[in-house]
Length: 401
Length: 76
Image (cartoon, rainbow over all chains, first blue to last red; front, side):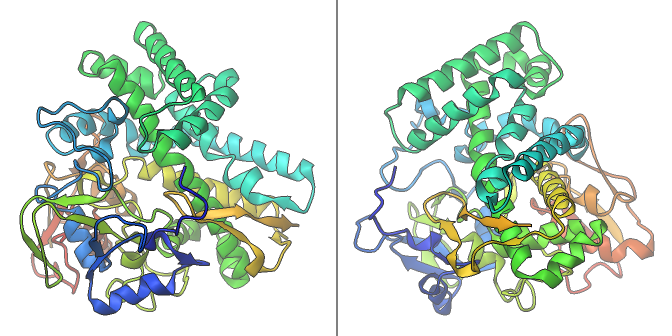
């Protein structure tokens, strides 16, 4: 875990819904800036890309911007393609051809139609959480009871974790992910999580069901190693927990702070698709995709990036680029959807984007329907934000109805 | 307007199909784009341009008279 008193890295700093002023000032120097993300705390300077067009160029060019080498203390993968154990199956850290091989097998499991089959289950999960919130009475913490409580069970549903195992599974998963980021050491809970995944994979190998793991084993059984199947489950949890809880909590807050905008979607569920796209753009919950390493010397945004340099793309700044849309700092739920990069861009574009969109649509709709009088129970400036996470979000969100 | 899709580039997001189901589909076999109408109805031109601009892989390109429309469809 990062030390509490360590400075928040520059590219993750925010003020309420906006990129923080010191982060935003960088855009004055052009769309590509040489910075240290943790000033004073060491770490090599790197390139921060803040322009929408330039971010799309970096993320869209996997031959010249590799995701293979991570910045900081992470070792690059061996030249023979061998990877450290804990990175196996994590697609965002792979380049082609390894990436192509895994992604090709996974993509059919994430089609829009296949995700729609999960819709009734997601609706049931959301309704259950709203029941719990209603029973708890107000004021209630929407972050704990709604935003953080929904993505876990949805991912369990996707992966095919039996209902009785879910609480344990999610508890171990959180413990695993908290210690698993960039660390060699594993806690007992982390090992227990890996053991559970191993048992789940073994069961599906023997007796595949209609769930995600079962389908993968049935369609591509011999092409995946057990380690890869476990890694893919970890990848889904890594990508799906904080990002969705961040979007649910921040999105609810953004709607509550703009009652006229809230009325637009509450009274017209058909407007919600567009509203979800705008919330994804405006809130830009993931701070940055996996850092890229320049494979050769490249000129980008007028700056010369040298082979071996690290390049970080700022999602919030790219999505607030004035070249992308007019008045980008205004939340406008009626806005014609723009090509935002909240799910990334190029070959690493979020494989679960269709699931995320559906989940957000279902959850916002149900929340506004269940609590038409929903409002903040504290002044907006007292809301606590989650600042030390790969995805922005609220820490607590007291509401009443 | 003529629509071209590059299935080799497609990242399988299904976004195009969600926006313009009359023109784009998503294969159940490989999750990639399927073109249902290479010459879409003029009424869908704006939506098709939007789908091309939003494609996360830059896999949709447009040609023909009403293709550019001020939108960069090359995906980069």
